[in-house]
Length: 497
Image 1 (cartoon, rainbow, N blue to C red):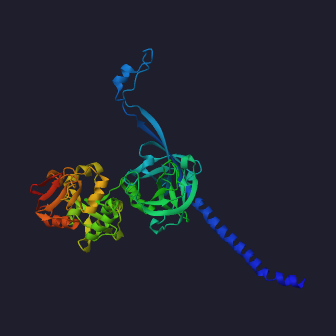
Image 2: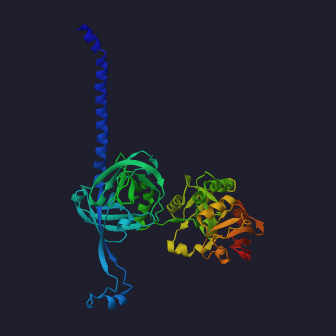
Image 3: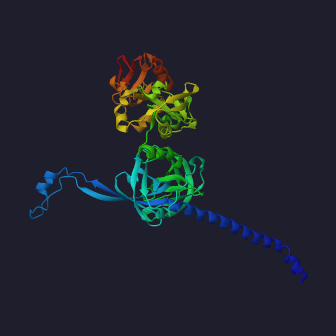
Protein backbone atom coordinates (compact mmCIF):
# COMPACT_ATOMS: atom_id res chain seq x y z
CA UNK A 1 0.00 0.00 0.00
CA UNK A 2 2.80 2.41 0.91
CA UNK A 3 4.68 1.48 -2.26
CA UNK A 4 1.62 2.20 -4.37
CA UNK A 5 1.19 5.58 -2.74
CA UNK A 6 4.85 6.47 -3.36
CA UNK A 7 4.46 5.55 -7.02
CA UNK A 8 1.33 7.67 -7.32
CA UNK A 9 2.56 10.82 -5.60
CA UNK A 10 4.97 11.99 -8.40
CA UNK A 11 2.05 12.10 -10.83
CA UNK A 12 -0.09 14.40 -8.75
CA UNK A 13 1.72 17.67 -9.73
CA UNK A 14 1.66 16.66 -13.43
CA UNK A 15 -2.06 16.00 -13.30
CA UNK A 16 -2.62 19.27 -11.49
CA UNK A 17 -0.49 21.00 -14.14
CA UNK A 18 -2.58 19.43 -16.90
CA UNK A 19 -5.79 20.54 -15.21
CA UNK A 20 -4.38 24.04 -14.74
CA UNK A 21 -3.22 24.07 -18.40
CA UNK A 22 -6.66 23.02 -19.59
CA UNK A 23 -8.27 25.75 -17.53
CA UNK A 24 -5.84 28.33 -18.96
CA UNK A 25 -6.51 27.12 -22.51
CA UNK A 26 -10.25 27.33 -21.91
CA UNK A 27 -9.91 30.86 -20.57
CA UNK A 28 -7.78 31.88 -23.58
CA UNK A 29 -10.26 30.25 -25.94
CA UNK A 30 -13.15 32.11 -24.35
CA UNK A 31 -11.29 35.41 -24.70
CA UNK A 32 -10.58 34.76 -28.39
CA UNK A 33 -14.16 33.61 -28.91
CA UNK A 34 -15.34 36.79 -27.24
CA UNK A 35 -13.28 38.93 -29.61
CA UNK A 36 -14.57 37.06 -32.66
CA UNK A 37 -18.16 37.47 -31.49
CA UNK A 38 -17.72 41.15 -30.71
CA UNK A 39 -16.57 42.13 -34.22
CA UNK A 40 -19.84 41.34 -36.07
CA UNK A 41 -21.84 42.94 -33.27
CA UNK A 42 -19.94 46.17 -33.78
CA UNK A 43 -19.99 46.30 -37.56
CA UNK A 44 -23.24 44.64 -38.70
CA UNK A 45 -25.52 47.62 -37.81
CA UNK A 46 -23.32 49.70 -40.17
CA UNK A 47 -23.54 47.35 -43.16
CA UNK A 48 -26.36 47.52 -45.70
CA UNK A 49 -27.45 45.58 -48.74
CA UNK A 50 -27.95 47.54 -51.95
CA UNK A 51 -30.61 46.46 -54.42
CA UNK A 52 -30.03 48.29 -57.68
CA UNK A 53 -32.48 48.58 -60.54
CA UNK A 54 -30.91 49.60 -63.83
CA UNK A 55 -32.66 50.51 -67.09
CA UNK A 56 -30.55 49.29 -70.00
CA UNK A 57 -30.91 49.21 -73.76
CA UNK A 58 -30.33 46.32 -76.13
CA UNK A 59 -28.41 47.09 -79.33
CA UNK A 60 -30.27 47.66 -82.58
CA UNK A 61 -30.61 44.69 -84.96
CA UNK A 62 -28.13 45.29 -87.81
CA UNK A 63 -29.82 42.58 -89.94
CA UNK A 64 -33.28 44.11 -89.78
CA UNK A 65 -34.00 44.06 -93.54
CA UNK A 66 -32.63 40.52 -93.97
CA UNK A 67 -34.69 39.24 -91.04
CA UNK A 68 -37.79 41.07 -92.27
CA UNK A 69 -37.77 39.24 -95.62
CA UNK A 70 -36.41 35.91 -94.44
CA UNK A 71 -37.85 35.38 -90.96
CA UNK A 72 -40.46 32.77 -92.03
CA UNK A 73 -41.42 29.28 -91.02
CA UNK A 74 -41.33 26.20 -93.28
CA UNK A 75 -44.67 27.13 -94.81
CA UNK A 76 -43.44 30.58 -95.70
CA UNK A 77 -45.52 32.32 -93.06
CA UNK A 78 -43.76 35.31 -91.35
CA UNK A 79 -42.79 34.51 -87.76
CA UNK A 80 -43.24 38.04 -86.57
CA UNK A 81 -41.98 41.53 -87.03
CA UNK A 82 -38.25 41.59 -86.25
CA UNK A 83 -36.90 44.11 -83.79
CA UNK A 84 -35.20 46.98 -85.60
CA UNK A 85 -34.70 49.52 -82.83
CA UNK A 86 -32.96 49.27 -79.44
CA UNK A 87 -35.14 47.70 -76.76
CA UNK A 88 -35.09 48.95 -73.19
CA UNK A 89 -35.08 46.43 -70.39
CA UNK A 90 -34.61 46.45 -66.63
CA UNK A 91 -31.81 44.57 -64.88
CA UNK A 92 -31.04 44.07 -61.20
CA UNK A 93 -27.71 44.31 -59.39
CA UNK A 94 -26.96 43.53 -55.77
CA UNK A 95 -24.12 44.80 -53.65
CA UNK A 96 -23.18 45.97 -50.18
CA UNK A 97 -22.21 49.22 -48.49
CA UNK A 98 -21.04 50.56 -45.16
CA UNK A 99 -22.38 53.61 -43.31
CA UNK A 100 -19.65 56.08 -42.35
CA UNK A 101 -21.47 59.32 -41.48
CA UNK A 102 -24.77 60.83 -40.28
CA UNK A 103 -25.75 64.48 -40.59
CA UNK A 104 -29.22 65.90 -39.82
CA UNK A 105 -31.03 62.63 -40.29
CA UNK A 106 -29.14 61.77 -43.47
CA UNK A 107 -26.89 58.70 -43.50
CA UNK A 108 -23.96 58.37 -45.90
CA UNK A 109 -22.46 55.10 -47.06
CA UNK A 110 -19.58 54.07 -49.29
CA UNK A 111 -19.73 51.29 -51.88
CA UNK A 112 -18.21 50.37 -55.24
CA UNK A 113 -18.87 52.36 -58.39
CA UNK A 114 -19.50 49.17 -60.38
CA UNK A 115 -22.42 48.37 -58.07
CA UNK A 116 -24.31 51.62 -58.79
CA UNK A 117 -22.93 52.95 -62.10
CA UNK A 118 -26.08 52.07 -64.11
CA UNK A 119 -28.58 52.65 -61.31
CA UNK A 120 -32.00 54.16 -61.95
CA UNK A 121 -33.36 53.15 -58.58
CA UNK A 122 -31.43 52.36 -55.39
CA UNK A 123 -32.89 50.49 -52.44
CA UNK A 124 -30.91 50.44 -49.18
CA UNK A 125 -31.73 47.44 -46.99
CA UNK A 126 -30.51 47.72 -43.39
CA UNK A 127 -29.37 44.77 -41.28
CA UNK A 128 -32.73 44.71 -39.48
CA UNK A 129 -34.76 44.57 -42.71
CA UNK A 130 -35.79 48.23 -43.07
CA UNK A 131 -35.83 49.62 -46.61
CA UNK A 132 -34.87 53.14 -47.67
CA UNK A 133 -34.61 54.84 -51.06
CA UNK A 134 -31.00 55.73 -51.78
CA UNK A 135 -29.53 58.71 -53.63
CA UNK A 136 -26.25 58.92 -55.49
CA UNK A 137 -23.90 61.56 -54.03
CA UNK A 138 -20.90 60.89 -56.25
CA UNK A 139 -19.07 58.10 -58.04
CA UNK A 140 -15.80 57.57 -59.91
CA UNK A 141 -14.79 54.60 -62.02
CA UNK A 142 -11.02 55.25 -61.78
CA UNK A 143 -11.08 54.25 -58.11
CA UNK A 144 -14.30 52.19 -58.30
CA UNK A 145 -15.88 54.05 -55.39
CA UNK A 146 -19.25 55.71 -54.85
CA UNK A 147 -21.03 57.47 -52.00
CA UNK A 148 -24.80 57.16 -51.46
CA UNK A 149 -27.18 58.79 -48.99
CA UNK A 150 -30.52 57.86 -47.47
CA UNK A 151 -32.84 59.45 -44.92
CA UNK A 152 -34.50 57.95 -41.84
CA UNK A 153 -36.66 59.09 -38.97
CA UNK A 154 -35.38 59.18 -35.40
CA UNK A 155 -36.75 55.76 -34.50
CA UNK A 156 -35.27 54.06 -37.56
CA UNK A 157 -31.92 55.76 -36.99
CA UNK A 158 -31.53 54.10 -33.58
CA UNK A 159 -30.93 50.71 -35.19
CA UNK A 160 -28.11 52.00 -37.38
CA UNK A 161 -24.50 52.67 -36.43
CA UNK A 162 -21.66 54.66 -37.92
CA UNK A 163 -18.71 52.44 -38.80
CA UNK A 164 -15.29 53.45 -37.57
CA UNK A 165 -12.56 53.69 -40.18
CA UNK A 166 -9.23 52.15 -39.22
CA UNK A 167 -5.73 52.82 -40.53
CA UNK A 168 -4.88 50.50 -43.42
CA UNK A 169 -1.22 51.59 -43.35
CA UNK A 170 -0.71 49.58 -40.15
CA UNK A 171 -1.78 46.25 -41.66
CA UNK A 172 0.58 43.31 -41.89
CA UNK A 173 0.35 40.01 -43.71
CA UNK A 174 -1.17 37.45 -41.35
CA UNK A 175 -3.54 39.86 -39.58
CA UNK A 176 -6.98 38.41 -38.99
CA UNK A 177 -9.82 40.03 -40.85
CA UNK A 178 -13.54 39.64 -41.58
CA UNK A 179 -15.53 40.40 -44.72
CA UNK A 180 -19.12 41.55 -44.23
CA UNK A 181 -21.85 41.84 -46.86
CA UNK A 182 -24.55 40.08 -48.85
CA UNK A 183 -22.83 37.38 -50.91
CA UNK A 184 -25.31 35.98 -53.43
CA UNK A 185 -28.08 37.76 -51.52
CA UNK A 186 -27.36 36.23 -48.11
CA UNK A 187 -27.56 39.44 -46.12
CA UNK A 188 -25.30 40.19 -43.14
CA UNK A 189 -22.96 37.31 -43.88
CA UNK A 190 -19.63 37.27 -42.05
CA UNK A 191 -16.58 35.40 -43.29
CA UNK A 192 -13.14 35.29 -41.73
CA UNK A 193 -9.57 35.01 -42.98
CA UNK A 194 -6.23 36.74 -42.92
CA UNK A 195 -4.44 39.45 -44.84
CA UNK A 196 -2.67 37.49 -47.59
CA UNK A 197 -0.87 40.34 -49.36
CA UNK A 198 -0.62 44.12 -49.15
CA UNK A 199 -0.22 46.35 -52.18
CA UNK A 200 -1.52 44.00 -54.88
CA UNK A 201 -1.87 45.77 -58.24
CA UNK A 202 -3.61 43.25 -60.47
CA UNK A 203 -7.11 44.35 -61.41
CA UNK A 204 -9.37 43.38 -64.35
CA UNK A 205 -10.48 47.00 -64.84
CA UNK A 206 -8.70 50.36 -64.92
CA UNK A 207 -8.72 50.87 -61.15
CA UNK A 208 -5.70 52.94 -60.04
CA UNK A 209 -5.84 51.65 -56.45
CA UNK A 210 -3.58 49.10 -54.93
CA UNK A 211 -5.40 46.36 -53.04
CA UNK A 212 -5.45 44.35 -49.84
CA UNK A 213 -5.58 40.64 -50.67
CA UNK A 214 -7.46 38.35 -48.28
CA UNK A 215 -8.61 34.74 -48.14
CA UNK A 216 -11.80 35.72 -46.28
CA UNK A 217 -14.56 34.43 -48.54
CA UNK A 218 -15.85 37.12 -50.90
CA UNK A 219 -18.52 36.46 -53.54
CA UNK A 220 -20.88 38.38 -55.81
CA UNK A 221 -22.89 40.68 -53.56
CA UNK A 222 -19.95 41.41 -51.25
CA UNK A 223 -18.81 44.28 -53.50
CA UNK A 224 -18.86 47.56 -51.59
CA UNK A 225 -19.01 45.90 -48.18
CA UNK A 226 -16.36 46.36 -45.50
CA UNK A 227 -13.25 44.38 -44.71
CA UNK A 228 -12.67 44.86 -40.98
CA UNK A 229 -9.97 44.18 -38.40
CA UNK A 230 -10.45 42.53 -35.03
CA UNK A 231 -11.43 45.86 -33.49
CA UNK A 232 -14.40 46.08 -35.85
CA UNK A 233 -12.76 48.96 -37.75
CA UNK A 234 -13.12 49.21 -41.52
CA UNK A 235 -9.74 48.65 -43.16
CA UNK A 236 -10.93 48.11 -46.74
CA UNK A 237 -13.82 48.09 -49.20
CA UNK A 238 -14.32 44.65 -50.80
CA UNK A 239 -14.13 45.13 -54.56
CA UNK A 240 -13.29 42.07 -56.67
CA UNK A 241 -12.23 38.44 -56.68
CA UNK A 242 -9.90 36.37 -58.82
CA UNK A 243 -11.69 33.18 -59.76
CA UNK A 244 -12.17 31.04 -62.85
CA UNK A 245 -15.57 29.85 -61.61
CA UNK A 246 -16.87 33.27 -60.55
CA UNK A 247 -17.14 32.13 -56.94
CA UNK A 248 -14.77 32.50 -54.00
CA UNK A 249 -11.39 30.88 -54.54
CA UNK A 250 -9.61 32.43 -51.58
CA UNK A 251 -8.47 35.42 -53.64
CA UNK A 252 -10.44 38.48 -52.56
CA UNK A 253 -9.33 42.09 -52.98
CA UNK A 254 -10.30 45.21 -51.06
CA UNK A 255 -9.46 48.89 -51.56
CA UNK A 256 -7.43 50.08 -48.53
CA UNK A 257 -9.60 52.42 -46.47
CA UNK A 258 -6.87 55.09 -46.41
CA UNK A 259 -7.22 55.28 -50.21
CA UNK A 260 -10.90 56.16 -49.89
CA UNK A 261 -10.73 59.10 -47.48
CA UNK A 262 -9.82 61.88 -49.94
CA UNK A 263 -12.24 60.41 -52.50
CA UNK A 264 -15.13 60.32 -50.04
CA UNK A 265 -14.60 63.90 -48.91
CA UNK A 266 -14.45 65.02 -52.54
CA UNK A 267 -17.80 63.36 -53.22
CA UNK A 268 -19.38 64.99 -50.17
CA UNK A 269 -17.99 68.44 -50.95
CA UNK A 270 -18.36 68.58 -54.72
CA UNK A 271 -19.93 65.36 -55.95
CA UNK A 272 -16.79 64.48 -57.94
CA UNK A 273 -13.07 63.96 -57.57
CA UNK A 274 -10.52 66.52 -58.75
CA UNK A 275 -7.37 64.54 -59.46
CA UNK A 276 -3.89 66.00 -59.39
CA UNK A 277 -1.98 65.72 -62.69
CA UNK A 278 1.74 65.74 -63.47
CA UNK A 279 1.73 65.42 -67.25
CA UNK A 280 4.14 62.54 -67.75
CA UNK A 281 4.36 59.28 -69.68
CA UNK A 282 5.41 56.38 -67.44
CA UNK A 283 6.98 52.97 -67.96
CA UNK A 284 8.01 50.02 -65.79
CA UNK A 285 11.03 48.75 -67.71
CA UNK A 286 11.74 46.12 -65.07
CA UNK A 287 8.58 44.13 -65.83
CA UNK A 288 9.13 44.32 -69.61
CA UNK A 289 12.79 43.34 -69.44
CA UNK A 290 12.16 40.53 -66.96
CA UNK A 291 9.55 39.10 -69.35
CA UNK A 292 12.18 39.09 -72.10
CA UNK A 293 14.97 37.69 -69.91
CA UNK A 294 16.08 38.15 -66.26
CA UNK A 295 19.66 38.47 -67.50
CA UNK A 296 18.67 41.25 -69.89
CA UNK A 297 16.81 43.00 -67.06
CA UNK A 298 19.89 42.84 -64.84
CA UNK A 299 22.23 44.10 -67.53
CA UNK A 300 20.07 47.01 -68.75
CA UNK A 301 18.96 48.30 -65.36
CA UNK A 302 22.37 47.83 -63.74
CA UNK A 303 23.88 50.01 -66.45
CA UNK A 304 21.28 52.66 -65.65
CA UNK A 305 21.90 52.31 -61.92
CA UNK A 306 18.40 51.21 -60.90
CA UNK A 307 18.58 47.41 -60.84
CA UNK A 308 16.81 46.08 -57.76
CA UNK A 309 15.35 49.51 -56.96
CA UNK A 310 11.65 50.29 -56.79
CA UNK A 311 10.42 53.16 -58.91
CA UNK A 312 8.91 54.26 -62.21
CA UNK A 313 10.61 55.64 -65.31
CA UNK A 314 9.43 58.91 -66.82
CA UNK A 315 9.65 58.31 -70.58
CA UNK A 316 7.82 61.40 -71.80
CA UNK A 317 6.73 64.90 -70.75
CA UNK A 318 3.56 66.69 -71.88
CA UNK A 319 4.16 70.14 -73.35
CA UNK A 320 3.47 72.99 -70.92
CA UNK A 321 2.49 70.50 -68.21
CA UNK A 322 3.26 70.81 -64.48
CA UNK A 323 6.09 68.31 -65.03
CA UNK A 324 7.59 70.42 -67.83
CA UNK A 325 7.39 73.59 -65.73
CA UNK A 326 9.11 71.85 -62.82
CA UNK A 327 11.91 70.59 -65.09
CA UNK A 328 11.12 66.89 -64.75
CA UNK A 329 12.83 65.11 -67.63
CA UNK A 330 12.53 61.95 -69.70
CA UNK A 331 14.77 59.36 -68.06
CA UNK A 332 14.06 60.51 -64.50
CA UNK A 333 13.40 57.54 -62.21
CA UNK A 334 10.71 58.38 -59.62
CA UNK A 335 11.21 56.58 -56.30
CA UNK A 336 8.88 58.47 -53.93
CA UNK A 337 6.06 61.03 -53.70
CA UNK A 338 5.94 63.16 -50.55
CA UNK A 339 8.23 60.68 -48.82
CA UNK A 340 6.13 57.61 -49.71
CA UNK A 341 8.04 55.00 -51.71
CA UNK A 342 6.75 54.20 -55.20
CA UNK A 343 7.05 50.80 -56.84
CA UNK A 344 4.52 50.86 -59.70
CA UNK A 345 2.70 53.07 -62.18
CA UNK A 346 -0.52 52.54 -60.23
CA UNK A 347 1.08 53.76 -57.00
CA UNK A 348 2.52 56.83 -58.70
CA UNK A 349 -0.78 57.61 -60.43
CA UNK A 350 -2.76 57.27 -57.20
CA UNK A 351 -0.23 59.17 -55.06
CA UNK A 352 -0.38 62.12 -57.47
CA UNK A 353 -4.12 61.82 -58.03
CA UNK A 354 -5.08 62.31 -54.38
CA UNK A 355 -3.12 65.57 -54.14
CA UNK A 356 -5.61 68.36 -54.94
CA UNK A 357 -4.85 70.41 -58.06
CA UNK A 358 -2.93 73.58 -57.25
CA UNK A 359 -1.00 72.00 -54.39
CA UNK A 360 2.61 70.89 -54.49
CA UNK A 361 3.86 67.33 -54.55
CA UNK A 362 7.48 66.47 -53.74
CA UNK A 363 8.91 63.88 -56.12
CA UNK A 364 12.12 62.07 -55.27
CA UNK A 365 13.88 61.15 -58.52
CA UNK A 366 17.12 59.53 -59.55
CA UNK A 367 18.70 61.56 -62.36
CA UNK A 368 22.02 60.23 -63.56
CA UNK A 369 23.82 59.21 -60.39
CA UNK A 370 22.17 61.80 -58.15
CA UNK A 371 18.97 61.60 -56.13
CA UNK A 372 17.07 64.85 -55.84
CA UNK A 373 13.71 66.19 -54.68
CA UNK A 374 11.63 68.19 -57.14
CA UNK A 375 8.54 70.14 -56.07
CA UNK A 376 5.75 70.20 -58.63
CA UNK A 377 2.60 72.33 -58.47
CA UNK A 378 0.00 69.94 -59.83
CA UNK A 379 -2.61 70.65 -62.45
CA UNK A 380 -6.02 68.98 -62.73
CA UNK A 381 -6.30 65.74 -64.61
CA UNK A 382 -8.62 65.83 -67.60
CA UNK A 383 -10.94 63.03 -68.66
CA UNK A 384 -9.20 60.07 -70.28
CA UNK A 385 -10.59 60.85 -73.73
CA UNK A 386 -9.19 64.39 -73.63
CA UNK A 387 -5.81 63.19 -72.37
CA UNK A 388 -5.63 60.56 -75.09
CA UNK A 389 -6.42 63.23 -77.67
CA UNK A 390 -3.44 65.27 -76.40
CA UNK A 391 -0.98 62.39 -76.07
CA UNK A 392 0.79 63.53 -79.26
CA UNK A 393 1.97 66.62 -77.33
CA UNK A 394 4.50 64.54 -75.40
CA UNK A 395 8.27 64.71 -75.77
CA UNK A 396 10.00 62.68 -77.18
CA UNK A 397 7.02 60.50 -78.15
CA UNK A 398 8.85 57.17 -78.13
CA UNK A 399 10.26 54.54 -75.76
CA UNK A 400 13.34 52.44 -76.47
CA UNK A 401 15.25 49.42 -75.19
CA UNK A 402 18.98 48.79 -75.75
CA UNK A 403 19.86 45.83 -77.97
CA UNK A 404 22.32 43.06 -77.17
CA UNK A 405 22.88 39.62 -78.65
CA UNK A 406 20.94 37.99 -75.80
CA UNK A 407 18.10 40.48 -76.07
CA UNK A 408 17.84 39.99 -79.84
CA UNK A 409 17.55 36.22 -79.39
CA UNK A 410 14.93 36.66 -76.68
CA UNK A 411 12.92 39.13 -78.78
CA UNK A 412 13.04 36.88 -81.85
CA UNK A 413 11.73 33.99 -79.75
CA UNK A 414 8.82 36.16 -78.66
CA UNK A 415 8.19 37.40 -82.23
CA UNK A 416 9.91 35.51 -85.04
CA UNK A 417 8.47 37.86 -87.68
CA UNK A 418 10.61 40.86 -86.64
CA UNK A 419 12.94 41.61 -89.54
CA UNK A 420 14.49 44.82 -88.21
CA UNK A 421 17.03 43.00 -86.03
CA UNK A 422 17.72 39.96 -88.21
CA UNK A 423 21.01 41.22 -89.68
CA UNK A 424 24.25 40.11 -88.06
CA UNK A 425 25.56 43.62 -88.67
CA UNK A 426 22.96 45.34 -86.52
CA UNK A 427 23.25 43.89 -83.04
CA UNK A 428 23.68 47.23 -81.33
CA UNK A 429 21.39 50.22 -81.01
CA UNK A 430 18.10 51.16 -79.43
CA UNK A 431 15.02 49.14 -80.30
CA UNK A 432 11.86 51.24 -80.44
CA UNK A 433 9.41 49.68 -78.03
CA UNK A 434 6.59 52.19 -78.55
CA UNK A 435 5.72 55.21 -80.67
CA UNK A 436 2.97 57.54 -79.51
CA UNK A 437 0.66 58.22 -82.48
CA UNK A 438 0.97 61.72 -84.00
CA UNK A 439 3.89 62.58 -81.70
CA UNK A 440 7.11 64.10 -83.04
CA UNK A 441 8.67 60.64 -83.26
CA UNK A 442 5.75 59.44 -85.35
CA UNK A 443 5.74 62.52 -87.60
CA UNK A 444 9.42 62.27 -88.52
CA UNK A 445 8.95 58.68 -89.66
CA UNK A 446 10.09 56.46 -86.80
CA UNK A 447 8.12 53.25 -86.35
CA UNK A 448 7.73 50.66 -83.64
CA UNK A 449 10.53 48.02 -83.83
CA UNK A 450 12.88 50.29 -85.79
CA UNK A 451 16.43 50.40 -84.42
CA UNK A 452 18.02 53.78 -83.61
CA UNK A 453 21.80 53.68 -84.09
CA UNK A 454 22.71 57.39 -83.79
CA UNK A 455 21.35 60.61 -82.38
CA UNK A 456 22.84 63.76 -83.92
CA UNK A 457 25.55 61.54 -85.47
CA UNK A 458 26.54 60.19 -82.03
CA UNK A 459 26.29 56.39 -81.64
CA UNK A 460 23.76 55.28 -79.01
CA UNK A 461 23.81 51.90 -77.31
CA UNK A 462 22.21 52.30 -73.87
CA UNK A 463 19.34 54.01 -72.10
CA UNK A 464 21.92 56.35 -70.61
CA UNK A 465 23.03 57.38 -74.11
CA UNK A 466 19.46 57.96 -75.23
CA UNK A 467 18.31 60.11 -72.32
CA UNK A 468 21.61 61.98 -72.01
CA UNK A 469 21.54 63.20 -75.62
CA UNK A 470 17.80 63.77 -75.50
CA UNK A 471 18.07 66.07 -72.49
CA UNK A 472 21.19 67.81 -73.79
CA UNK A 473 19.22 68.80 -76.90
CA UNK A 474 16.07 69.58 -74.92
CA UNK A 475 12.50 69.84 -76.20
CA UNK A 476 13.28 72.99 -78.20
CA UNK A 477 16.52 71.78 -79.82
CA UNK A 478 17.18 70.04 -83.13
CA UNK A 479 17.52 66.28 -83.11
CA UNK A 480 18.27 63.89 -85.97
CA UNK A 481 17.89 60.13 -85.57
CA UNK A 482 19.80 57.59 -87.66
CA UNK A 483 17.68 54.47 -87.70
CA UNK A 484 17.21 51.13 -89.37
CA UNK A 485 13.79 50.18 -90.76
CA UNK A 486 13.74 46.60 -92.01
CA UNK A 487 16.86 46.38 -94.19
CA UNK A 488 17.25 50.10 -94.84
CA UNK A 489 19.21 52.66 -92.84
CA UNK A 490 17.87 56.25 -92.94
CA UNK A 491 18.02 59.58 -91.15
CA UNK A 492 15.06 61.60 -89.92
CA UNK A 493 14.65 65.20 -90.97
CA UNK A 494 15.95 67.86 -88.60
CA UNK A 495 12.90 68.75 -86.62
CA UNK A 496 12.38 70.40 -83.26
CA UNK A 497 10.77 68.27 -80.62
